[in-house]
Length: 124
View 1 (cartoon, rainbow, N blue to C red):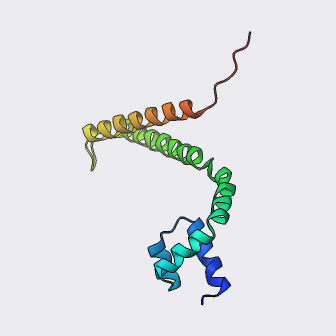
View 2: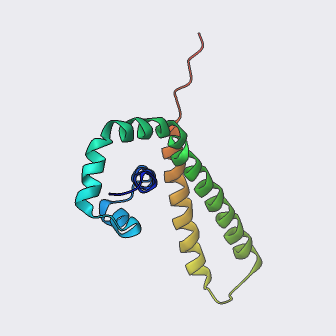
View 3: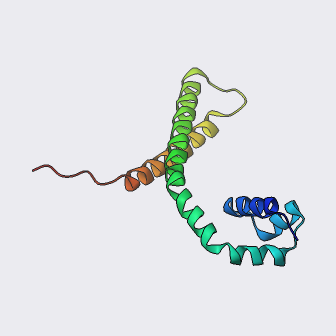
């Protein structure tokens, strides 16, 4: 028989999205036992997962914002480098290629960002 603490740890790990195999290895509980616990606690797991969805709904937007900031910073740095040099370790042609790639990626991310923003109401 397993302790209540072990069952609570199972719930916590399952809510974090860990697989039965991973949880079995961490807790030293057989996979069939974990599956049985999961069936018994299914409503509880679903309720807790539903409660956590709003907290994670901003995660993709934050990730996109961070990547946009990083790309803008890299583009600015590369432009500064291109303006300040003739040749160093990386050829100017390679830097131009990298700049074009980053600008294209930035454009794609900005398009995604615009498509996820709610439409603004049109004033009459």
